[in-house]
Length: 91
View 1 (spheres, one colour):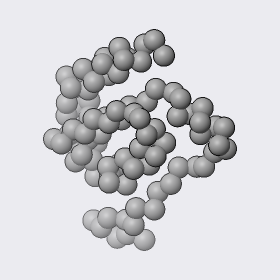
View 2: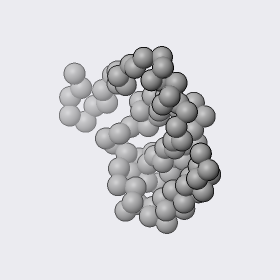
View 3: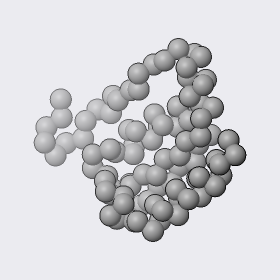
């Protein structure tokens, strides 16, 4: 167990679904917008899990943003969400 101020072992995992459920999930549009300075939802642990679940999904890494993306980069977040909606509207 990590002590305060230490980084954990990075053993996070998503619940495993059936092959059918995983395939259906992968067919859904998805995107990730990540604050690279987030001390809670650390990209080095969680982005690989997202990429495994959605291998073709776009990922936007905001180098100057932390946990509260909407406060750190509201214009960028709005633009990325609008772009994602436009790209996936017909799906």
